[in-house]
Amino acid sequence: MRTRAGSSREGGAACRPGTRTLAGKEVRVTIWGMTGADDEPLGFLLYRVMAALRPQVTAELSPLGIGLPEYVCMRILALKPGQTSAELARGTQVSAQAMNQVLRGLEERGAVTRPVTPATGKALPARLTRDGTTLLKRAEAAIRVADERVLTGLGDDRRHELKQLLGEVGIPWPTGSDDTANCRRD
Image 1 (cartoon, rainbow, N blue to C red):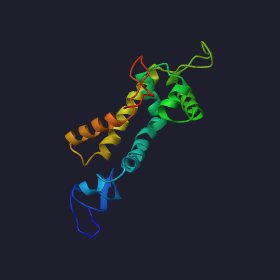
Image 2: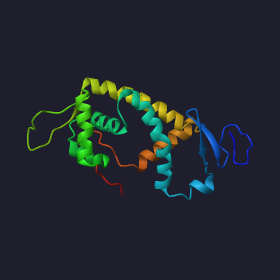
Image 3: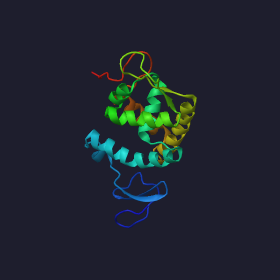
Image 4: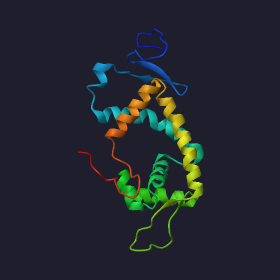
């Protein structure tokens, strides 16, 4: 790794501003020590993580013909089948129009099914098809490859700890018959 001063250093855990190899590409990074990241707002840190993760996920999902919104939609439907477009939109904090477009795309490729006419009202509950479940499994494997690339500098214990902490502070996902998608943590 080349640091700003121009010296070479393997790894990168102790370096400051410089470059790092990520998925075979040299990228300019600043690796924060305890005095840096501890003082940063959480939103900024999460933005930095997503800025590193999103292009990796996009690259891995692209061969499957889906993007991150389609993956998230399928993942939620696997956890709680029968969600409507409106429920999925609220749970993922996107517009109803955007989620409807995602669902239509997944329907066209046979990954999701919705009834032609609603049983009551206007709601059309969505469910993964067998092909959708297969696609979701392939997408999850692809995303794990992206995760590995982004988390390459962390050991197994730190990866586990990071995921546990993020899971504790995030909005709970729907997991069964009770709707916890819009719960707040006190």
